[in-house]
Length: 198
Image (cartoon, rainbow, N blue to C red; front, side, top):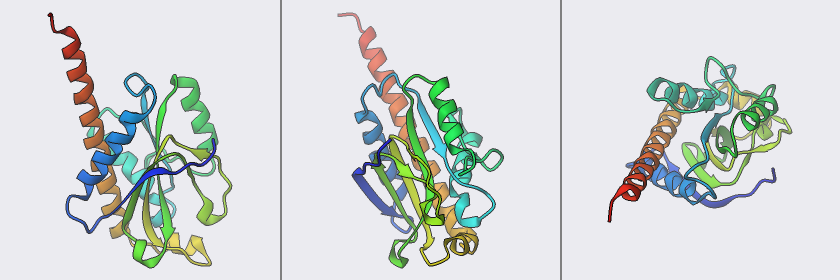
């Protein structure tokens, strides 16, 4: 898959109603995907609990698994990381017909970007900050900027504040749940309207 970035929204965890902003944009992006009303939505939460900064994806995955029957790959208990990402994507492709994959990951950025959450249409390339060359994954991407990029990215990930990672991961999880709830409500309303006898 080739990396493509379109319709990007950037919000910061310091903003009021950040989860609502993200949810609305994510819902719009999901609804615009071809075949959105029948394709399964897969939440691919990338990262590892070995480094604080890299635990964003697994934390989001664990929050989602605790709160609903979502289709999640990647959690604190069963992380999806550089060592098994390609295999996981293959498993998803075999198990689901034309899955809509929402890829969620942490990233490093500039000082003024820390705390930002970005959502866009298109995939992401996990592991670039630490020198991994992994395939581009996702139909829609969600990233959280957890720390400042530096010369030694492993150190930045190791020394990232747990507080910022938790705040960003909770905002992302909340936004995902709200977006999927809205989509489920839209689908239910569409089904009901189709049953109306005229």
